[in-house]
Length: 579
Image (tube, rainbow, N blue to C red; front, top):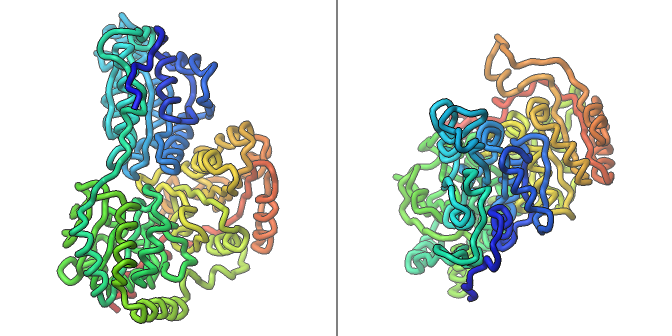
């Protein structure tokens, strides 16, 4: 490995920072130029890094988070300090709670040497100003302030390392003007080396003896159940999960954030568990004697608020695989923890099951048949509203039309609100890793930025953003970026002229949750998109198919009813499991 210093000639600090990003093989810089960070943009002139200009820092930060989530490399978000910590922290929050690698590069706008006099926009934390560092460290895995050019380069290298090592997450480097305006010397201490020498390629050696015990426990289980969380997506362990499930014959339920960890058309898939889950998945989970949990913290929303009828450590054996030791036995005491990368652990588990012919093939066949019969009996992921022709259109009908209109090469991004829980509950995924949602922090305005980033990562896939009219209104200016980049994303708006979740939670008295009807199709057209308005459910499939074939961004404004509530898809544990 070449460990010679990488700086051969004296360089401007930001030129050296861009070189670090290139050495880490990062592709994009998401942000809005401003403040001292404009020097970073000046250094992009001859770089392979492509700047993606958004119209708001929220959009840029979400794009960076989703890029990191999909690639495993940190998405880079940059903006002036003041607007990083006000407008741009949504992506960081989602990344922190959802384990997405992300790198935030921002400044103090310190107005040196006058920062101690409360100068305009100063963010050093001096009297009269705000503190950029304090704000970003509250929403990042690691953050640092740099005052020296060499320190700036090495801190960006360490931030990339920390963003991708162990339990991935967002990191931040806050630049003082003394670092930004300086030069990185050719010689001197500490020396600067190639960024790749700092990035740890994880090869976590999990406990093989413990894994053998796990395999034996699964072999002897009467009713095993697999919970697949977001960790499957982070590790890109789709094939390994499916293999283990097939070898054991176990049903696979996902958390809401883990939705599409296994495609829900797979014979072993039983849909989402927990508060927004399917009757079949929660029923089988409650009846399991051995539960294999992969990449999930078993949060309250995934366990019906830790209801013992669903998961009970006293009557069920719990096996938990997680890359972060803190997550094992965090929310439930676990009998058999395995600390390691989900992809590697599941691969070794599959090898053990195969090599030693651990599983009784007849038992596996019987289990799969039982899952199939139960799916048919319970009407797996189907409800009568999916066939309704009522006007205004029911959201369930929209989701059924979407299912019939797409193929396995389609990615779906979701917003927060009722549109998300309806999709989590009713939409049957056709391919693994095909749904991206803000289920970790859950902020509105997520779908369009997520779709933009997804299309950058997967240019050959169709990408559809699903948003409510509330969330769409927050980041609809992302469509300007879609037009400028020539990204033919399709945005579906559930338009019921209200903040549905808020409105339905308020009961009879409605306060600040309803608004005037808006023609979002025309707004899309004004930005350069195609726009369609749908009032009749019979128009859904033809319009969606037409939009997917177009080569331009499309907005489909669907007039949906406000009479369907998130409460309708909340799992009624008392009736379903205890009744």
